[in-house]
Image (cartoon, rainbow, N blue to C red; front, side, top):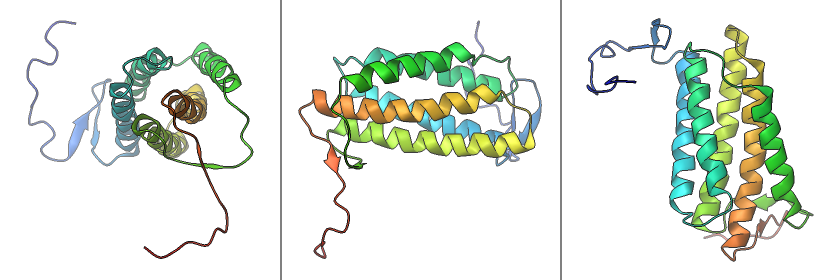
Length: 185
């Protein structure tokens, strides 16, 4: 790869545009850039989750997901298609396996629990935003339809991972109590 990033600032974006992998320039508020930003934010948040998991059965999965999200970003920026059906199948296999380790849900749960679990729930919500951006992008440009499926399945997996992380740290799911009388703070 050489010294591609030997200089961090280039000044080429000072006028509100940025370069894509296929050498096109686009406005920094273009839907492509918004989508890339949401995926980057998700990737960063997954890094936060990983930082709280010194020994966890989901840590390796999350590291692989970070690599896949970087691949997806490259694909959306005009690079070659990388997300394939096998990526989605892998997420589904992990989702099924991890979900089998948990008690069935009878109520909705609120984001929370341990720090890592709460951040994993937050990653799930950022993942949903990235999915919405992908849907918006798809209305304006041809994108790999598997990208949306991947991110959709990933949000489900992050939900289950948050539950696993909380269970492994001794925290229970925080159950939603609909209509519960709440006292003003």
